[in-house]
Length: 93
Image (cartoon, rainbow, N blue to C red; front, side, top):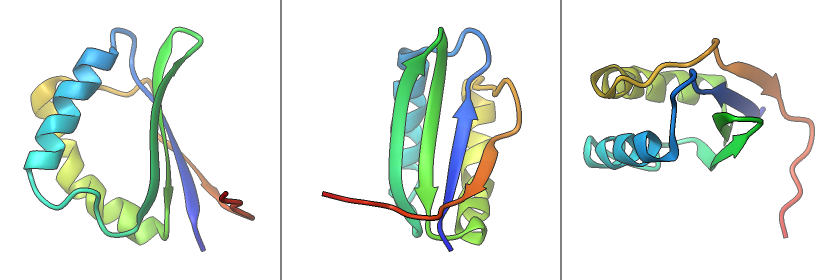
């Protein structure tokens, strides 16, 4: 079952910080990681956010083990734990 994961950056998160971190994540190993179907980064309501669709929670958690040290090194924080939802349906063009 696929999952949707929604992250909200802490105050002060910017597109520039995201871009710098994304470059490091891509350089740190295989990207996109196994199981990542879709990754979308955007600003909404004054907050920088990322939403992703994963094939499974296990694949998301495995990538998190690689991701978190990079985020810590670059000073990226979240305003809360990511929200995780089971996906009922996905429509692609």
